[in-house]
Length: 62
Image (cartoon, rainbow, N blue to C red; front, side, top):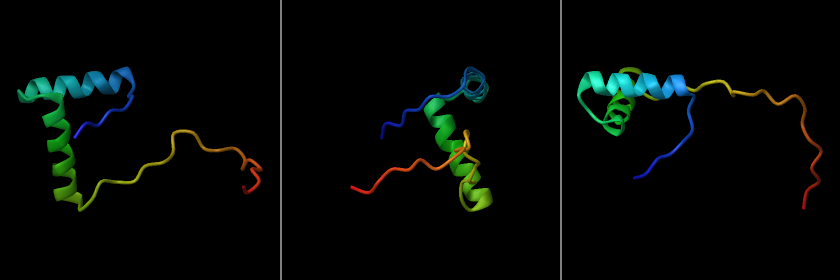
């Protein structure tokens, strides 16, 4: 299944480097990393939002 997303250049470089050191593709590396974290921790961790919302916008119900 296709999964796409934007990441910072340093994150992309880090994943490319780790995959190359492992001798695997980026896709395989990410899938194996996710599986490893799930096996170790039980699930992927939750993370904070990158941009906290300053205020709630008043959007009327339709």
